[in-house]
Length: 276
Image 1: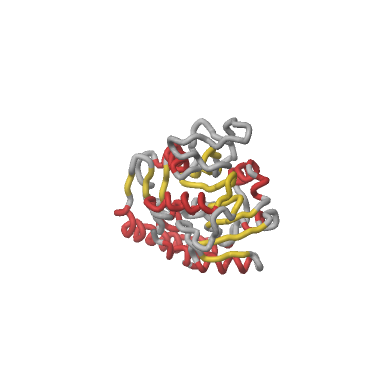
Image 2 (image 1 turned 90 degrees about the vertical axis):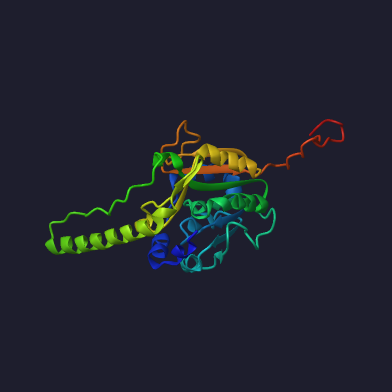
């Protein structure tokens, strides 16, 4: 989509200011903790929000981002970290079966064309070792209610100081104008499908297009790419809740320990003659 947005000063500064793990990430990573302590690839690392937590735990830590500006911001905050520019759709330069865990956080996958989403899953599957895990998050289609987010200008924060109120009012008017300009520019590209939607949501004054997916359909896509044992987490870190009502859903899926048998073949047998 429009990857140049991630070179913008305001977005780079925002990503570089973040330094925390979300409850859903703690829950998902905790479930595969032995893999976190192995060889880890942090995709879409941004300004390094997760780097400080994972780099000191992993046996080896590598990170990538589509934006060179983000790479530079992450390196500045985490000197010595192996952070490079790269494309999640191919993971070129990363060998087959090189990692125990791949993390693609902060809904980074939702800013890739939906038609390329399968390419991301296949690339991650390729670089994972058998038994490895993929943890990522994505926007939840259910929260949209079947229609795009309405255009809503940023709120005016009240203050008793008249000068501050004047400055805040001017900033609100400027931001509101940016929102309207961005909606006119991008609103015509919005669409809804049965299993996903592309919408112009409020992120960064409506300057981005974001994919929202149905969690059930996402599990089907993971299975089609070869992953097994997919589970989801809500914002509070609850595993496989009966209903996802949060804007984000976190996913954990695994690469099988053994490759699946081709259709029409039998599983390998042990020396004793029993199927393994």
